[in-house]
Image (cartoon, rainbow, N blue to C red):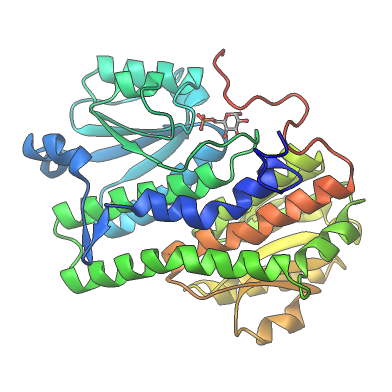
Length: 373
Ligand code: G6P
């Protein structure tokens, strides 16, 4: 087993560190000569699906659901098609309105999650076309789908999803760009800029990982200082919101610390009552069109004497006056910022869990794939 861990103490840490390669593999062959290629979708394209589709529903659970929430933001922007991301255990029992004009996208790294499979089967029965996004070749979801986009992330042993999260996001983003292109909403120079930014991401993730492995790492020392807290809040806006949800889920899953993610602007409508000096807040404040709004929300929190840890873009010195600790990530386009912001959050959760002596590779009560309801 030590050999399988490749010199890392845990699979989770190995897989966090494999993310640059996993991202490269997810884009391999799909971005070529500055152009997007998704041959898996050719059959559906020829059938006219992408001209006809009126609505998209993304069905998923857990971390895959968070990838779906991110995809909602970008697909709506890029393709101007309404998108709903819904958790599969709700979708299957809500008698959803779907039909041949509703594209259903199933996101499931294992391809075997029972709720996702049942929900998708029902949607198909009503005539909805299905695209699966999964890591496992020939898994159950692939047999229920009209097209499959594989993550190509390589095996993930740790129960918590890390590299399958970032690759799910990238594959969904590629699908979003493809839809934008098909609907003639993305001009070719915009497409080139998006693809170039995507191709740059693996090196940027590597930069974060290298810093975290070096002598100037701030994440592990911060995690050790936070290891004894009982509660933590994560906030973000726009694509920072699903990032906050995923950051909170990672912390819950492997460290058993109670953590919640909120849209930053919603905090004051109730949950801010929970904040006190013992409940740190983690804010996602990377560069975005709503950066100032997030900063305002972080200031509201600090007024309650809560400690603020902020994920920000490298070069943002101003943020230091609003934060007790800053975790910097490189600059990218706003849409892609979650793919960088999530890396310090994964490392933070990992180090908190190790400091608390938790079983990081196999957390209590959790399974890699949930094949029963
Ligand atoms: C389980 C795992 C989670 C995962 C979820 C959905 O609960 O512990 O890490 O996000 O299932 O899994 P899927 O394979 O459908 O993406």
